[in-house]
Amino acid sequence: MTTVSKIEWTERTWNPTVGCTKISPGCKHCYAEGMAGRLQAMKTPGYENGFELTLLPQRLDDPLKRKTSTTYFVNSMSDLFHEDVPFDYVAKVFDVIERAHWHTFQILTKRADRLEAFFTGKTAPSNAWLGVSVEDRKYGVPRIDHLRRVDAAIRFLSVEPLLEDVGALDLTNIHWVIVGGESGPKARPMKIDWVDSIRGQCEDAGVAFFFKQWGGWGADGVKRAKKYNGRELHGRTWDQMPDVEQRI
Image (cartoon, rainbow, N blue to C red; front, top):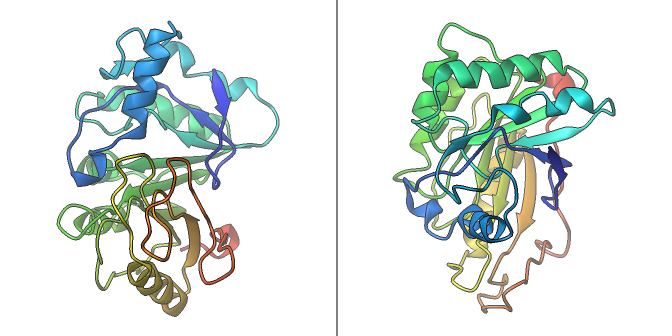
C-alpha cells in the first residue's frame, strides 16, 4: 500500500517499515509517532504495534504495481536505516527501487552513519535520492559528511525542523536543501535569519533551495494557530528542485 502525500516535495509515501525511536532533538515532537498512535487506535493494518519498529515485507512490491511514474517518499513513518532494520532488508528495499526504475524514491535518515556503511563499496540506484536530517549543529550538521561519502545521483538535506542557526555548511556535492519550521502546538520557533543564511549559501553554491513551511511560528516571530504552515519567504515561495541532468 502506498499513500498520496500532502508533503509539498513528494507525491506519494511508501512505508516498508513503520515505527522508530528518538535519537536527536529533531525527534522531540515527531509527527509520525502521534500519527502511528491514531492509526493503531483505528486498527489500521501495519500499525498493530503502534510506533514500535516493525518490518512490513508484504509492502515491498507495492511500487512495482503502480505503472504511472511517481515520486515516492520512502518511510515517512519510520527510518529505513534504523539500527534494528537489518541490512539484508534494506537491500530488499533498494532492489525494489532499482527494479521500479520509472519511479523516483526519496530516502531520508537521521542514521547517516548506517547510510554510509550500507553503501560502502556500492552505488545507489540512479532513481534514489538520498538525504539526511539537519536540525542543528551538534547532531544534524555532522550527518552531511556521511551523506557526501555515499555514491548517489542526488544527495539532499532536510533542514527541518530548523532549531538554530546551523552556521556555515559545506554543500559540496549536495544537490538540494529543504528548509522548514516545526509544526504542532508545541512547535519550537524558527528565525528568518537562520533561513536566509541557508538560502544564501545554497545560492552561492548553486544548490536547489526548497522552503517547505514556517510551521507553528511566522516570519515575524509570532506563534500561530496549530495548523499554520505559511510557505512564503520574503513574499514568494521557493520550490526549487534538483536538476537531475546536472547531478554530480
